[in-house]
Length: 140
Image (cartoon, rainbow, N blue to C red; front, side, top):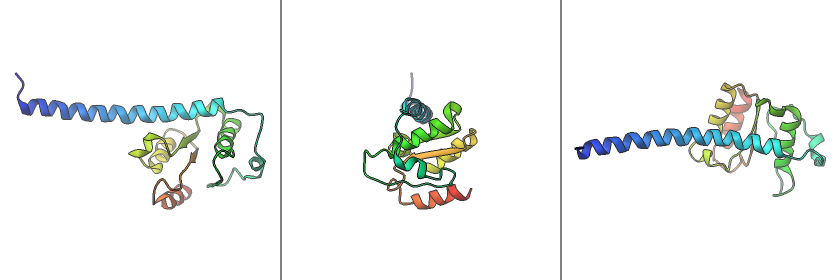
């Protein structure tokens, strides 16, 4: 027969295991979502701004109203330049993964797994320290 303490210990251990599985699954989901969004973007029409951007800059910020094509431009750029190599990653900061992780965590993970480019959406406003993180990403 299990004591109350044993049951509590089992629940705590199971909770930690579930949390680790959830974090891993969420990161995998983030990457699969990126791949799906890049693979399915249309490449027939490009916004006028696409060719005016210096894509070699270390930090590019594009702002504008919803629905004007900012996200589509980012996805088109990844598909056109990097293809399915995995060296570029697209992530929306609205993703559930960012509820318990920071953009710098994603950048670090991506870099340590061979990534060279990280393109994000809705970085501003997701954290009061976004400016600090963006500067850290540009200087490293």
